[in-house]
Length: 169
Image: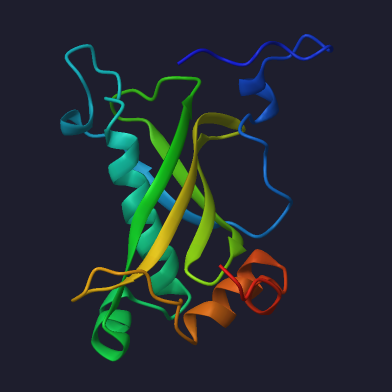
């Protein structure tokens, strides 16, 4: 993957935050420590590891909102699945680094949820993910409207009326 060209001020997309940094909405912070199992032979974090970290952070973000996956499965026979992920990598994480995965809800629509996730170390963004999740019926594996209270809580986290404004999808 190639990096976007430098801005007119000479800064790279990486130093600007890349992937169209989301508005200043609150982020859920999930701390991560880089273990040997997360790295390649050179002690640098393997690219697919970022996807595992993002999944854990999304799960904990929902849990901290009072919306665990297990409850959605039990009460609504629904699950959230990854529909699309776009990843940009800028700086490597290395063995023993302490990182934070920031998760922000960007938009909530009828069936889908858009998130911004970033792996950061201090002020540096190491990787950014734009994640689209879809709600599906766990038995029929067909799209299903995001149930309440997930819809309302997630729309509030997005800082918008997306839950009510985007009814058609």
